[in-house]
Image (cartoon, rainbow, N blue to C red):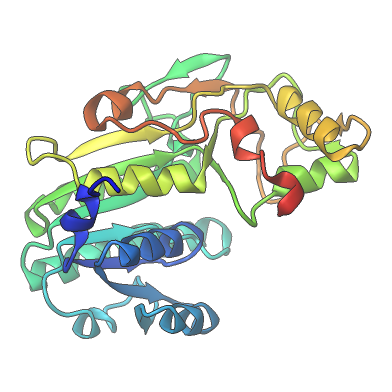
Length: 300
């Protein structure tokens, strides 16, 4: 069997994960298999119980406060902020993302440099539409209110550079994967939100995990970068919905023309470019299109 150098890289090292939910828990499980020690912070006691059973040292606290600072001691090799808003609308965004990042920076300054810190932001910081190809240089000053709060969190991280060895911001496209099949459920229900001609930028959870690990393992010459994380598909919502309907054996769905209930507006029609992440870190999506990502749909 070939020697896996990634085992050597993570063996005995320590990772702190802030917001150990859908993505964070997957990262935790992956690095545990590679010999790392993991500390996770979550506000959810039920999630904490599951994580502890898997051998993850877990702290239950609100990230935006400082009550956890003393409980997450030492200088980790890696830190990951993938906290979610937890609901609450704009105020929830401000509390979790801006307040949470401010708390992390304050904690890191007290601890001393905390190695590589990765923050999972979102492509919602980009306002571009009309089929534009959007890379990391695209202007973000016209982002909607929630996007502006994510940008403020990014700014707080960049301003706290002295508190970590280096930082990376990963702007994630629409997340899907095991156990997360919102679009599938809409197709089953016969109506999909939005319009069929809109491009649907997606990224599979496991490919997000791979991007995060690529940041942790990046050469020292690669630091303080922003990367888009999206697959290679850029398919339209109609392409995906019709393929899913055929796969599920259900009639082709209609399109509501309106945003999903959880959204205030329809996501702009654009193509999120991933070329920088590929070029700088050698990352490639294991699920380059929705077809690979939904290949095991029948076994979910």
